[in-house]
Length: 293
Image (cartoon, rainbow, N blue to C red; front, side):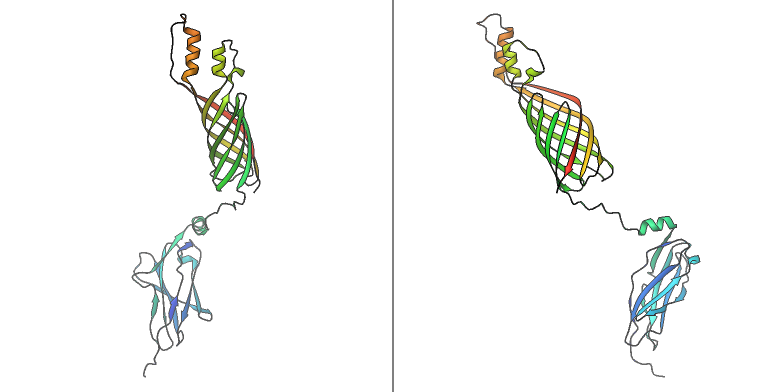
């Protein structure tokens, strides 16, 4: 008999890549051809075997076909490919083939579930701007504006105050998660302007008092903290770490102090250069943050 004209069906298939051990494996495909579908088959085997087994696919409506590899066969990795012929025997067309089959990794049920579960996304980050208040030692207190360009990064900048005087500061905080108790790494730096250190000491020498009346100093802190509450709206925190301080004194002030304290002969003149004082000390702070937008 003369064979009718036509072509084997075109196959559209999304490969199965993961399965649970002992669970059946559903394989679905779409077969489209002008001369219909006479035979649609899944050819499968355990990985490493030589021979394939044939599993007929059933029509699931329209051009859709489906077959199920029994759960008892899902004891190890499965290799498979699809083939189909039209009603006149043209074909078979294939998706995959015997030499380059699709591979289904068969895992223990818990592992398979973990591998197929979509990655956990961080919660929606819908508050970007806030304000913060804090107090501590030896840095004093502060009021800052908070900006969160990324969910794990928070920038701050504002004013600082301690018993000596006012200053300004800025820094950043890194939060690896948003939890009821969130660990943070906090880096800050700033400068205090013309602080009066006579408040901390009883000095009678006028030159020394003049020197201590307008002390500028720069500071930097590195602290680990715990924040309690909501990262989205309100939390309070406790932080501890190390602080670095650096202060400079003008040569004129040091010259005046030296001349008044050391010179026994008024005709002897001293001239001092600029001086610098540095220190590292433990620091501790606590405060709260409110995000408003």
